[in-house]
Image 1: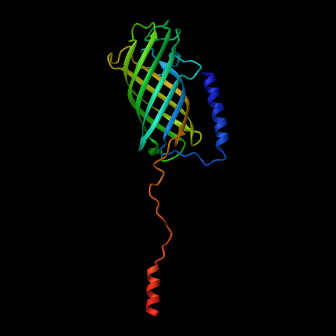
Image 2: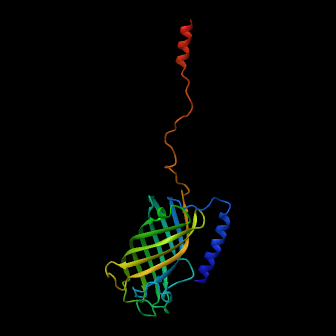
Length: 232
């Protein structure tokens, strides 16, 4: 995790330096798309009452989570998350060590940003909920190889500029078939997010006016003609 920490410190310094000449960071109440790339820490030790045991987190030094977020209305958005994680045989998985392999998951969430509570600024907390599909390729016989999950979680974005930020999040995933059993796990992530008002090739229909109203005054010619007739 030292590499992750070093990268984030470096990124914060670079983006903060570049953002200085521009206007101050504002917590926008809307955007079009948001994309993220994150490092993942998987908690699959089987101890539901201790969800943040650092010594049992399965981690690796390369980012393996990709997020795509589409904004809809009034703080609500929908997101898709793809995650790949690798098991460390020296750390516990469902109470045992020696588990090797990997896991791939696809998650689809509704997301609500709590920006209205803070009015404005660089801090943007959010809550998420939805469903997911987890596929394990390891030697853990206690958990299902493929499991449908119910997901709930939350996180926070720290906006370095109006478009770039650092995201922290935690998501609890509960197996639908084996409810609150060995297929349950948690994932924590830290990464970089970028938000866009429009994407290349998209037209911003909401900002374009379909009807143009001319503000120029029109001269009324028939009044002048009537005056000439009266004088004659």
